[in-house]
Length: 613
Image: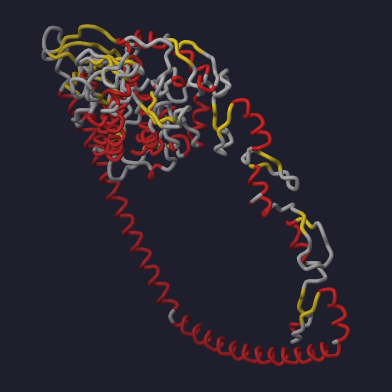
């Protein structure tokens, strides 16, 4: 099924707007009127507009052919058929008929102006190409944006000599810009423009940016007398300042003498006030020191008592916290041990409630089997006790037994024998998400739906204070009706009110999906899963792994510096904005999974019918 996207365009003949199919390979030949040499047969005529069909679409409801634009006109009515008026129709491009229409012979749209070209409709676009076409009568708009419409033989002269928007160089400062800017606004602002001194001192051709420097030396500038501080109020031109100083030298001497006398009298008063103030301060300090000596022993004892009390209170608080953390840890360990002991006597018996049918994966420490449990198809993770590596499978089972959500793989049971540990999990038939998006063509709204399901599962985990730590497409399974479920909790960690971060030392992390704090601060938090989720969205859209062209060391540098992947082709900006929100460097600024799920609803609805190629 093809969803037709249209946009407005302008006819090159009459300058009137019409609608054009942006997915058509022959976009330059789509005009609202074609001049055929021979009248087209009725089989090429649209059943709605009675014109030769543009991209003929065959409708499933009544089997008639219509232009893609005629079907698109009813977009507001949910693709209503122009003939039988049925809603939500399915229309398929009839490529064979479209090919025959492109083979019909037409004339050049500019025949009335003297162009003698004739040829197939499919070749008309090349003939009318504004850059490489051979039509001499095609009028094009100036590429500089001045709005002038030109014929092909006029373009070169216009761009070189006549266009007011052509690039020219200022003869004074060598700045390049549009011709109208250089001769207009730039001319009045050019710092290298030569001007005459505005004071008429005779200096000419001064560069505008040196004008202030010239004013500092210009003899025509009016300046104040050097003895202004003494009381002289005369203002004279700089060139006459020396003559003024000579003529009024006696007056200046008397002004300076009076000024010095006033300053000396003022300083004497200030010194007398300062001495008086210092005597008062010394008296107060002497009284204060005497009082402090009397109370020295009592003050020291009070400070000592307060310090001891604070130390005891802080010590009790630390002991209470350690006791609570220890009790929580011992309770979880005891619960895990009790489950293991309770199941020690339950053997894995062929032909009873558990049956192993086929092995799916095997390595030295673990086997993955497909089988049945209580007449239900299941997946069995089998770990041999002799390897001494059963810690991860027991931790995974301990976490999964408390998680019940439609987007998380369900744990059915756990069997522990003398030789093996078997964890029985829900069977999700369509494999992991990475392989699914590579092998199944999906619409954009289906990609959004997949990402929302994963976000809902992760939101449930964070409500339980559970960190997954390996969020990637290979650890998400796809079931019936594209139902997504989180899998592989072997590295998951349960947090509590006192433990908000987890150290990454010794943790084999999927480097290209990890948040920057994994490498910079050597720890992870709940917001680290949000970063990895942004990488998962990129995987779903592109079908590729992040940083697929980079080594792990180079990927770490890019993650630390924020040089991440650009927006994928055909990915809406609103969808890419969600990824950027997940990839913020500071964990506290990243959104919650509840907020991400709400944002995905806004991405999904406007693009419900968009085909992602």
